[in-house]
Amino acid sequence: MTYRKKMAAGNWKMNGHWAELSEVSTLLERHPNPACDVLLCPPATLLSRMSDMTVDGAVMTGGQDCHTDENGAHTGDIAASMLADAGADYVILGHSERRADHTEEDDDVRTKAKVALNAGLKVIICCGETLAEREAANTLDIIGGQLAGSIPDNVTGENMVVAYEPVWAIGTGKIPTLDQIGEVHDFIRAQLERRFGEGVGRSTRILYGGSVKAGNATEIFAVSNVDGALVGGASLKAGDFSPIIDALEASK
Ligand code: PGA
View 1 (cartoon, helix red, strand yellow):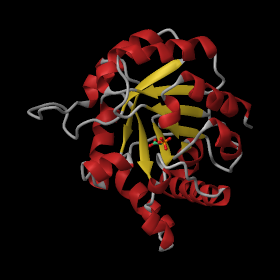
View 2 (cartoon, helix red, strand yellow):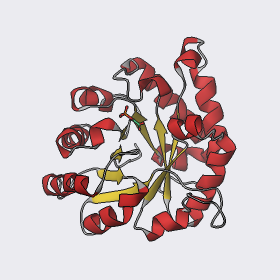
View 3 (tube, protein in one colour):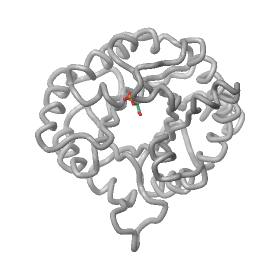
View 4 (cartoon, protein in one colour):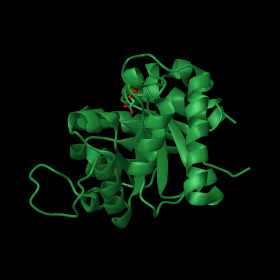
């Protein structure tokens, strides 16, 4: 079986000021040598400072988005190379909040991924269905389309992670059944193997995201082809995120 290092990724979204960096200190103290990758994606304003704090530690940092262009006249936007310059290892791309709030399409996500990879970042490509799409039994079609459209050709199991995040499970406290999670993760694995071959397909990590908490992490991490989690709300406090890291380290 191909080895895949598990990953616990936290997405702080538009939350956190300087004071909240104390949570990172606590996390670094609690997990000096984690058995899984631990990643925090703070707002861009904290990225440089958080990266400085974690540079010798066991936590990696990432951005939450980047622009499709490498630089230029785009007031308020952030280039992938700037994230890398601020110390980021990763960037989250195609999160459903970006797709909904900023009308990002698969094409945009793919272009951003190319620019990010060129800048030396690793990418977390997000996909997920809405509740209406699930109820219409369109989940796998939607996920298949998003993967085909959003992932560029030059990815490897090293430079890309896929996150499955049902839109209706994000921030709602609702999660799909474990069978539903397993069905989508198995489908994503099969799609990756078909397009990129077994080497890349089997070594790419697939994270589940959407209302992951300490109380449900262990059962989610036991699901087939779940290689970790992308965590929003429960990543803001070390006291909430730490038990999720523990659960991931304990998972097989
Ligand atoms: P949540 O967010 O854990 O707060 O549901 C997950 C995400 O959007 O990545």
